Length: 280
Length: 222
Image 1: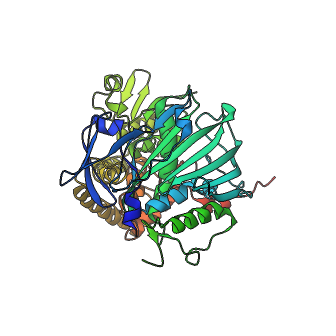
Image 2: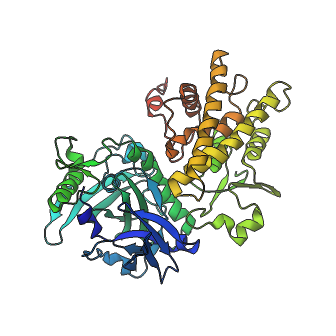
Image 3: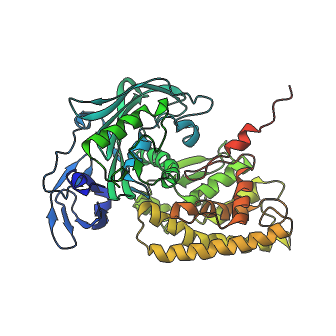
């Protein structure tokens, strides 16, 4: 565990929809917090009344409890005109925040967990792709991924081979770029922002920035919620609960290259909050 | 041809009861996705005009509007099951037993259903209290199902699945979402397996397909 490292990142603690219903009592890295609206002038305090810095980005309210926070990562596509921003609410999962991110990066489970949507038997092969730690930006990237999907997005009319790219800009956030069915030259953006409540318990805020002007909001949000809830029971049953960073503890396969890069990247930056390490 | 319109939310176990019943009976319908969460659209003016109680699902067939899930199951079986086996309402022995089970289904909605919403969406209820109530209801289901097994039966009523099975199934199946695992409930586990193996069965998030059965599908004799 490395609370100090984790405390200097920014985390989502509310969206506009939840603050519209009243203050949100929540927890971040083991600290109980209260988030008070309105969304454009929010206040985040702990139970002792200490105020924490806030910023509104990607339709969420972000805070940090560290003394020397790193800047919040940039998602340049968020500012591209024509994209529809879809905050999908929050889902609580009893798992390590790092396991939630790693599951989001995994393609191999699509045909078995998201059957008929993101994958289908017998199209289970994960073709070779590239996973790397990009030193210039200090991020994990996985590129050149393609996978057959029966219903890649709400806007897809039928099965297509979808192109994917993954980006991990912070230990508890992951961004996915995937083929946009109505605009094959563009990529849809789907992200998860994880709010670590503790090392074994998190709130996950899925968010999308799509080129889709026709599907109504309820259908878009429910498409994403359906997929995420299919993962939830599996995430809650992963053992050990914390993410092992020692490659001897969980044996990876070729399809897990992104996960290998992610774990290596976490280890070398000392991002151990939610991880099982030699030190713990 | 579509027989009704269902106002539905993808993570709702009650909405899933109606989707499952319609699928098992092969009844086509139209869906309208309602942004229950995070939008609370079921409490919007437009939705309250349709259902003043502000709940989901809502079933509309012509002038008929139903807002009680168990009533929807009864409507589907009465109108779309010519065999009468899914809801043997006129049978003096079986009919009342089906209604008795619908009572437990409603209690499960208020216990296991709320415990699940609390665990997943941080619903503002007393999490510990609803979990306790859910555990009690699951124990009752386990005992009643054990009696059925000892009587040589698979289903809750008679020798064919009924709307009682469909009404009780989703909240029992989804209880692990609230940390209430099925390990201590062998009779429930076997019965869940039986429901999942019904021809035409459909899934919802948290209730998976039986992969092992699909592999056993008989080959085409041609």
